[in-house]
Image 1: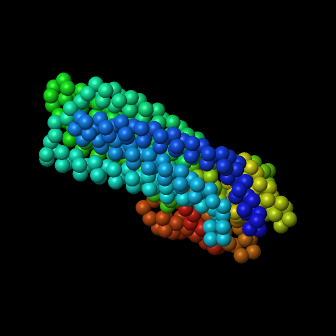
Image 2 (image 1 turned 120 degrees about the horizontal axis):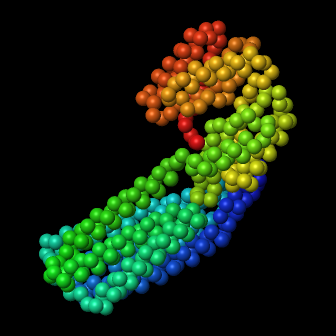
Image 3 (image 1 turned 60 degrees about the horizontal axis):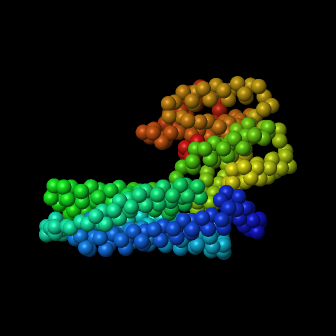
Length: 387
């Protein structure tokens, strides 16, 4: 069974993003970023020192942090591609989220460091000196960072790499920062007003905000987010494509890196199916979801739907009407009646917007007991896990 799971895991990685090809794309993109940012940092550092511009010097330091971020992306990608082992049977893909977090922390560090230096310059100002060559290089830097930012974001979205996307966002921000530095230089040349230190402080605050936003998004992914709507709807559509399946519910997806998702789902089937037929169906469902949606279904639960009795069908619709009359109930499924014990069981999904989920559950239960006092109700309170 473990060998089978390993094969399925490897298959998903290969199917979705090309496995080793994805790694090559990320590394190639990162190397381009390292080269571009290192050159820009060198040019800006020289110009900043010669002109006495704190904003340009800080911008150079920021470019170096971008280059370091690309190095971290490469290391994280390499480690994430390590094969599964006994301690980490589902692979090491989540390392990419950690590398994205490190990049976010680097951005935050650069922002706070820049803010401290800018405040020092505000307290003890230095008059900058600009040259035509310096201004030309800054202009080129703006254009280069725009190109790098767009390139990183495009590639990052294509290969589903948070590290590249974060680096792309940072590069785009750098282009705005460099453009602001250029504007300050023009103002000083034309009006004699030095805004360098104040601009440096503003730049620092923008960098800090960007770092916080990146960190918040990465932490959210590590904590576990609601599955993408298109993915969850696609999986349920695949499951329901089998004629025996009457409905698909309770989809749970666990993300083990950008290229590996493992989950479970419940499906409603007629109560007339035999164990052999159910076994065959679940295997087909798992295989089709793997091929079409690139998700491993580690478990497929079964809801048995009463199909032999018209009275039960009418009872189900009446109960559904009562349950769905609540503004907070999103879904009712898994309905089944044990006629011998007069027990009615089903699952009910209640919105997170309800003030008190347990109170709403109890209110609906009392309504049903009042309408059907001779029946016992077993209502499972489900979370709103996916679309």
